[in-house]
Structures are given as structure tokens and as C-alpha cells.
Image (cartoon, rainbow, N blue to C red; front, side, top):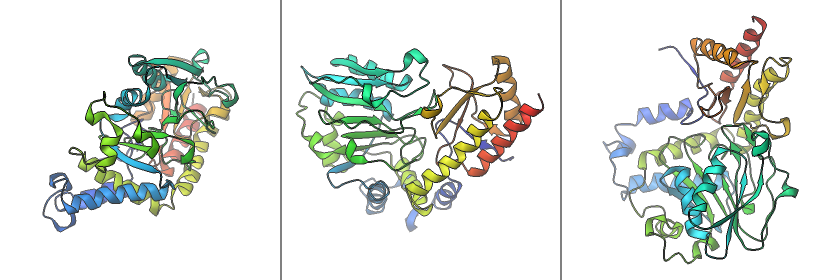
Length: 360
């Protein structure tokens, strides 16, 4: 089979080393004679994997002791509902910062449960920027302030997060978790679907400050309470064991690469290759995101016409570039350069973009 360059937006590339390790022990994990997918989630062999994944994430992200790491199901989309169900009580406001389609979806779910507000929105500019932190509008009775740290569809990313004292700051980090160091203590809750930087789809990671677990939620179904999962070490019901096994492998790989700081450096170098191809094209390629808001994870751009976009994408596909189509809602082109996308793939894309432009 011909090798491909995987720029899919999610599910996305996994490190080759991780896939090879999983392949090697797929039918006989840790001498059990069984796949990890066949083990009881109550077995010592699986529980060791489970706990190691928690410990590794705490280590890599310098997560303070007053935070719990949870493994949940339902993707980030279920978190859109769980969050207001947990925190959006009568007399409180769920305050949302809109920077793209996923933050809009989070707000839509919260409106079904309680009162909401919009702290800021960049929709008027077709989500090509990130709001200025000094212009965010808060309310005294905010239950929380919610943001999406990276916007896969429009290719924007928060560089600096707001410091909020009056309410917990909650972040959907599905598409840039573990791509750079962050100050965990700025947040009350961070959540992320795994299928972009952490592993395959099926598990959602939540990092929650312990005091938020004490919220009274007697009217919330048991399985939708964060405390339920915190009290049971995310083993209240059968977890997605293979997804967590793969998450553990990816975290091990991140540590082997030198940790999150080393990953950030490489991500910056990868993104620069492609942004340089855009910036040096004299308008042949046009980036969607404003320069100061550009994402290191999702690089969005267009050629002069939609017909040109389609011709470019067709040629790219012919040469083994996968996943360069923009999201179906906006079109254009998008290169997702998540942690596991090799530097060499970005070099190849840069060279293709240059040669394609020159030959037009």
C-alpha cells in the first residue's frame, strides 16, 4: 500500500510507534493471552493501564493535586449538556464565548437547560479571530464562562486565556489538548474528545477542580454527574477500555518525545512550514484566520476560486495527501497538523503547495 500523508481533522493521525506497539500486543496483552479489549475492566491488568494513563496525564500537564482526571464517554458533545446540567442552576447564567461552530453548539445545549449569555462573539467576522480578553462581558451571577480553545473548522486558537475570578473558566480543548503547556489552575474544568491529540475516538478526558464536584446535583441522572465518575476513578460503568489503552500509549509517546514543551516546539515548526507557503504565495493561497489568531492545529486556507480549491484538492489526493478538504460547512482547504502528524508530512505539503502554485 502506498504511504499517505494524513491531515484528517478527526479522527486523525496516531503516532506510528503507538500503532506498532498496539499491533504487537493486540492478541496477547501483558502475557494474559487476551487482547486488552477482552479484559475485564475490573482486572488488575486493565486497572494498571487505566491508572497509568491518569498518572501520565497529570505528570505531562503538571496537573495540581486539587484536580481530578476523568475518563468519560459521549464525546465532547455530551459535555455540552453535562456542564449546564451540573452548574447552571436557577438564578445563574452560563456565559459563552463564541469563536466557532463548536462553541455555538455548546451554547445551544445550555439554552435548553437554563439562562445563558454571550460574553463575546467573532461570528460577524466569520470567526476569523479570537476576542480580546479585555473586551469580554461578564455577569455577577455567571455560573461559569465557557470557551473553545481551538477551532477546527475556522482555524483559530486562543494564545492567552482570560483570568477569571468570579466564576469557573471551562474550556473545550478537544482539538489542541496536550499540544502546548497551559496553566491548569486558570480553569475549573477542561474537557476534550480524544480523537485529535490523545488517541482514537471513544473516550473523553475531563480535568476538573475538586471543589466543583461538591455542587448539589440531585436532579441530574447519576451517570451524568462528574462526582459519580470521580468517586469511582472513572470505573462507575464499563469504560472504553481500548480507547483508554491507546490513550495511555499516546501519553507514553508524548513523554518519550520530551514532553509537552518539545511537542509544542515541533508543532510550531510544522505549522510555520504551511503558513509560510500561504504567506509567500502572493495571494494564491489565502489564509482564513487573522495572523494573530492562527491555530497551530488546523490551518485553513483557500485558493482564488472554489474551482481552484477543487483542482488543488484533487491533485493533492492523487499524490497521497489525505484530509485536506475544509469542513463541509465552510469548504476550502484545511491541514490539521496535530501532535502525531510527522514533520516530514508537513515538509511534503509545503513542497507540494509551492510546486502547485508555480505550475499554475
